Length: 84
Picture 1 (cartoon, rainbow, N blue to C red):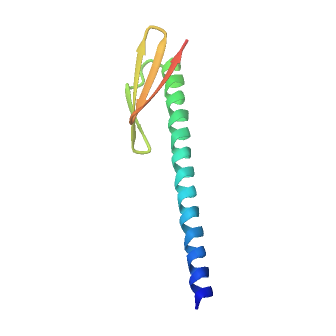
Picture 2 (cartoon, helix red, strand yellow; picture 1 turned 45 degrees about the vertical axis):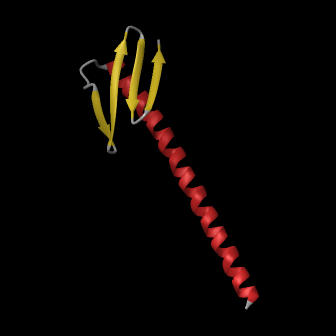
Picture 3 (cartoon, rainbow, N blue to C red; picture 1 turned 120 degrees about the vertical axis):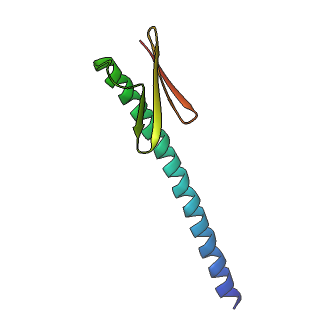
């Protein structure tokens, strides 16, 4: 009986740890995806100035702004800047 409870406890700990690790990896991938999309939006604005200031990609709103030679994209609470 004690062996079964120990095995169950270990199995639950492994499942909990794997769940935490997978969730953190998805957060990391989401941050990288935001960064890539922000840089893509800057490149689109450099090619064509007729692109709207607000773009929605996969349900997230990206706001583009330009001040002199500084390009900025805001998404959620993150701000990505490129200075040329």
